[in-house]
Image (cartoon, rainbow, N blue to C red; front, top):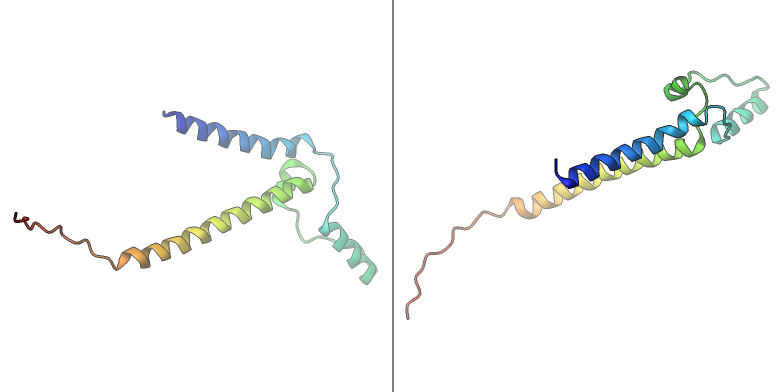
Length: 114
């Protein structure tokens, strides 16, 4: 295994550990956000307690609410992946247009005369 491959694998492992350790270490932590504010507003308007339709999968796995920082991390990862896909697609289309019409020219074998 090359040195670069080891560095990439260790970096990926570090990112995964940094992303998931807080999920399990902060099980009892409470964080507020726009979802909480929305449910309070619905209760004010309707006069009834708001009941969510479902529980997110990760909240079921860790047994509590996701910290706001982790939700932000997931949003940033999703955004980065989307931007990466779009940038790759646009780059591919530009390169295909730029280099797709060019045919490889055969080198000329003309001999120079003195």
